[in-house]
Each structure stands twice: as structure tokens, then as C-alpha cells.
Length: 336
Image (cartoon, rainbow, N blue to C red; front, side, top):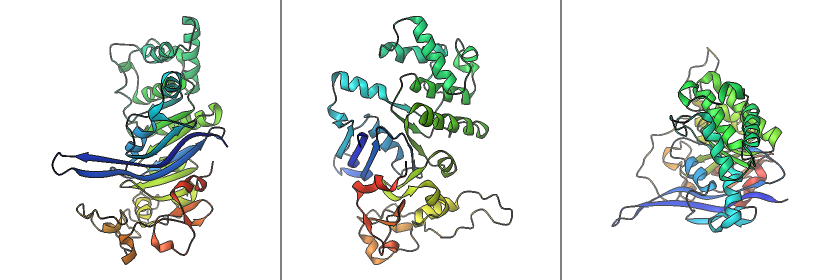
């Protein structure tokens, strides 16, 4: 099975200061493989500071890993040059959180779509470029005649975000990195944008890394999920299993923070009571150790992933009776 993208034991460490050289591990030993011929949507979830955006920046080649490799179609992205680098830039696209930041208020929407077409020489005439723009806008549920020729301030936030998706789609990408794409959009429009992303995967063969802190949107868009906490994988597997039956104490805490549509159940009536985070407690053990109500002596050593079922594993010694899953086997847990 040919791999579109591979993360091989990727770690990213940020250092600060000249004398103290204090460091923060934003991502720790993460491996993941996306097959080229099996388009899928994988959610990467976690709270702020979990390493989600660092992962996105690594996937896009904006920053380099401190350890490990990122391969695109078998080639290390840090060593790509010439035509291979141009192909990577065209085929791996991003949709970011802010639907306003990518627009220049002095240009019409057409400018955002024509620049990548010209940059990558995807049209031989103005007519062909126009057809390509219209095709992309239609694919994301917008009417070209209502969008083209208008300025950004004449559009809603939901329209702008779908135009951002269309900008990526016009390049016919193979991978889309969507970093919190609906967090700044009205709740009434989120379903439309999520459905647009699912349509890209189903109808256009685009694999999507969907990065979010919102587990409700993760449940609706993806088949598989990876839960991060302070750079480490806490739990991974089938999104239905992980959301409905979370196993890691951190995942259970996240799930229980979601408001329930049950008038008899109080919001915040958590199944587990996490301790307040002790920021000074770094250590080399489980990243959740300082907050975990189930902490044990062996938690001073990081737990491997233990596989409870075909498509669910958690990094917690509560499940040490189950077989271990090495970090490079993480992809086996994720259904396509």
C-alpha cells in the first residue's frame, strides 16, 4: 500500500533562553501513515497546548521536526527541491482557523482564487481559469455568480471560510490540513462547512487531517481520532468508540466537559475529578500524571499504548493487561 504521507517517530522541541536553554516538548514521538489510495479524515483533538497546531505546521513543512522524519510520497519533505517541492506545495493545502485573515480587503474574491492558479500554471487561458474557479466554488456549495466579483466585507464568515476551502480545492490537493476551521464560524454554519469537508473526501479523494478542540464536530466529521495532551498521544482509534466509551482518564474528562441534552443531568457532573494542573511537575512520566486521580507508582514512566480492541488504544497503565501497540503501529488503530 503506497503511502501519501508518513510521520516517523516525529518529535518537536522548542527551546527558549540563552543561558537556561529551557525547553518544551510540543510533540513527542508521533507516527502516522496516510495511504494514497484510501482517502480518509483523521481528527487530532486536544485542549490548547496539546501540540495540535505544531503538528499542522510540521505536516505543512513550515517547521522542521527536532527528531524523526516526515515523508511525502516516500521523500523527506525537508529535502524536497525543484519540481518535487512545487508538487508538495500544491498537493498539501491548509484551511486555518480565521476566515478573515487570508483576504486582502482591497481585492475581490477572484484574486484569492486566481493567484494559486497562476502560481502553479493550472490554466492556459482566462476562460479556463474562470471555469476552474467556478468548479471549486460550486463544489463547496457556493454559487459563483453570487461570489465572484465581490469584496470580502460583502461576505459572511461562513462564505469566507468556504471560499478558503475552494482556494485549496482549486489546486486539486491530495491532503488538506484543516486547523480549527469552524471555531470562528457561527454555530448555524458549522454543519455546512463540515459537510463541505466530508464532500471533499468522498467526492474528490482528498484526505483530511481535521484539527480541533471540539469533540462534537470531531464526532460528526471523522471516522478516526487521535487525542493529544501536552504533545503525547493519550488515546486513539475509531471515533465512535473513543467518544462513546473513552478509556484514558484525560479523554473521559474531555468527553464529560461536553454539555449533555439531558435536563436531569447537571453539566460538570464529571465521572472523574481531575486535579488542578501542576505546571512545574514536568518529569519524564505520563504527561497527565499531575492531574490524574488514578495515578500509580508506575506512572512515573510513560505508558505505551495498550490495545483494548481492534480500533481503540489508550496510553495508561490501567490497561496494562492488554497487548501493547508501538508508536509506529498507531495507524493500524485508525479505521479508513
